[in-house]
Amino acid sequence: MSDNFDTEVLVVGGGPAGYVTAIRAAQYDLDVTLVEMDALGGTCLNRGCIPSKALISAANVVHEARNGSAMGITAEIDVDFQQMVEWKDDVVRNMNRSVEKLCKANRVSFVEGRVTFADEHTVHIEQSDGGSDRLTFEHAVLATGSRPIELPGFEFDNSGVLDAKGALELDELPESLVVVGAGYIGMELSMLFAKLGVDITVLEALDTMMPAFSSDLVAPVSSAASELGIETNYGELASECRSTDQGVVVCTESVDGDARHEYEAEAVLVAVGRNPVTDTMDLDQIGLDPDEDGFIQTDKYGRTDVDHVFAVGDVAGEPMLAHAGSTEGEIAAAEIAGRNPVSKDRATPAVAFTSPEIATVGMTEAEAEQTGHTVSVGEFPMRASGRALTTGHAEGFVRLVSGDDGVVLGGQVVGPEASELIAEITLAVEEGLTTSEFAEVVHSHPTLSEATYEAAANERGLAIHTLNR
Ligand code: NAI
Image 1 (tube, protein in one colour):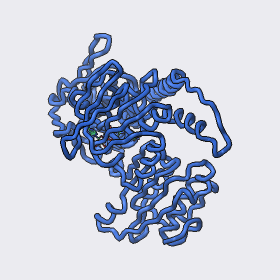
Image 2 (cartoon, protein in one colour):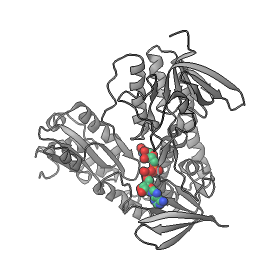
Image 3 (cartoon, protein in one colour):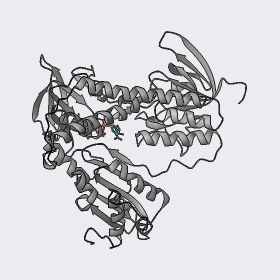
Image 4 (tube, protein in one colour):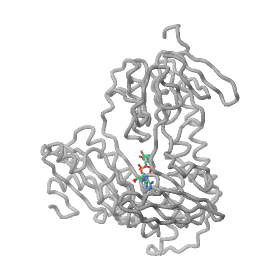
């Protein structure tokens, strides 16, 4: 390291993009300082992926127990929500401590505080106890993440108007909840709370839920939502929110006209997307100008227009997913260390932890056609999977999309454990495996992964447990 700087690599933000960058850079023997103003682990660990998945698991236990009559199980279920919340908080606290220990063990220096840039190689760090510090750095990696979009008139107050964080930090279950936005967060949390007995009404501007996924992937989730008693209203824009003695009234305008509706509930959860946090660091001091949506443009190694400054995770644009941020962090760290990184153009899966789960990677059939491939598709329905039937969850399918040479270009899964099944398809897409190579791999029986194997065989007209097309 040049003696001119306090640290070789300054990482701003300790979420899954930032702490992974810091640890990887330290593994490459760089001197690293990680600055975070809140808990290590960022939104994902503290206010997003981890607490939501903990509560989703708990709600699934409740739901399974209440719906076991076909298996001969009937039970009176008593939900102690405070205990459930304590358990979820314990999971988060344990993981916080693990991240802290990992940073320490890898010799990453941790500084608590809020960073603003003073000049191209200097930051100010404002600590929560009122103290402040100044640090010079050779390279900086920006990993400050994103915040929920606040609709005008729906200011988050942690009681009547909730963002995902507020919803995941409730210590009492509301009787009813209006959910604005039927995307990832809206549907994951709607299904979770519906399983715990909350009366859910979803308001969505578009004419479908989960617009990021194709309609055949969404259909099983939409039916499951109806079965849970979730009322979904499409084509309605939430435009106004009033608080009342009982909670809130949400007013909507229909997208195609001036019809207005009103929905009452104890609280409203607003999940209409997230914006990058790039407006609080005085980036102009280093000559960085985010685009009109607030994202920082980078090259395939995460390098910004300012040569010694990198950006990873949500601030660097779509996909705004934790694992994408971590991968970008590993690549940026390797680039800074001069370790010939592979570029960030990698097969990146996306998963919605709804019921059933949806998971995708690479191209859909339509995308492959649009890019000039002669497309071939292999599919396998979960109802033909012995393992799926033995779990009582046999809805959904696995689909593999391949080009004329049989190379797997993408895959879509909806059904039990889709979040896990997508890993094998991601491997195939990343490594350019063909469906025949896929179908040569022996899969254990009885497992859900046989569905992927059979989808590969089906593409070649050789599936055993379903009719070939
Ligand atoms: P989203 O973009 O997934 O969905 C927002 C929805 O709100 C859209 O369907 C949109 O049409 C609708 N909408 C917007 N304004 C509206 C209005 N005024 N009235 C009614 N509907 C309106 O955004 P979400 O769910 O907030 O998630 C944000 C991001 O967080 C996702 O894009 C994803 O990157 C990340 N995330 C990922 C998860 C995962 O990987 N499992 C889970 C949760 C979040």
